[in-house]
Image (cartoon, rainbow, N blue to C red; front, side, top):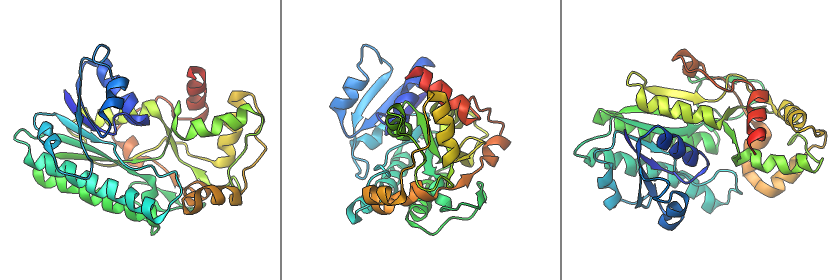
Length: 307
C-alpha cells in the first residue's frame, strides 16, 4: 500500500512509519518541518518514505499528493498537555478542525481517491468522571476537550460523502518510550514517584504497539468502519498505575503530586490528569481485535525492558 501520514514525526507517527517500512509499504510523510523529517527518515534507511512539506490548516500543492494513496492517517494536532492559554486552546481546536477539513478537501480533489481515512479523536470526547463507565455508544461530555472532539469527528465524517471508509479512533493515554510515561518515569527513578492528585481518577491507556496494530487493521480490513476506543480493556485508577509502575521499576510509589501543583503547572489542562475517565473498548473488542498488551503490568514490563 501507499499511505499518507500527517504527524508522522511524532510519538505515534514514528512507530507507525517504522512498522509500515518493515511491512514493505510506501509512506508519504506530510510535514511542517522537512529538515527534521529528513533527519528522522534518511533516504538510505527509509527508501520507501517520500517527504513533502505541508501546512495542516492551509490548502496547497501537498493536497494533490493524496491522489493515488491507498489510505490516509491523520495524526497531526497541537499538543494537549500544555497550559491552556486562550491562544493555545484556539490552536488545539483549529489544528484538529481545519487540519482534518483540509485532509478531507484533498481527498475530495483526488483523481484516484484513497479508500480509507484513519482519523484519531480522543477519549476526552466523553468528558471526565470517577464513577461512570464509557464506551463507544456513550454520549459526549460538555467540557472543552469534549467540544474539540465532537467538532474534530464531525469534520472527519464529511469524508463518508465521498465514498471513503472512515475509522475514528478515540485515543486513550498512549504508553511507550515517550509521551506521558516518559514524564512519569524520572521521579520514580529518584525514589520520588507517586500518584497525581488523589489517585482515584481513572487512567484509560493503550500500549503504543497495540495502537499501531489497530491503525493498521483500520487501513487493511475493508469491512471495518466506524468509531473505536483505542484503549486497553483494563483501565486502572491512577493509584494502581503508580503501584504497578513502582513494582516493575522496583521503586516506591507513595509520594503523591498534589492537585495544586498540577493546577499551577498546567492550569485548566490539569483537569485531564486529575479527573480522568473509565473507558472500555467494546466496539474494538467486538470486531475481534486481539491486544498484545491487555494488562498494565504486561505493557509496562515490555516498555521498561526496552528503555
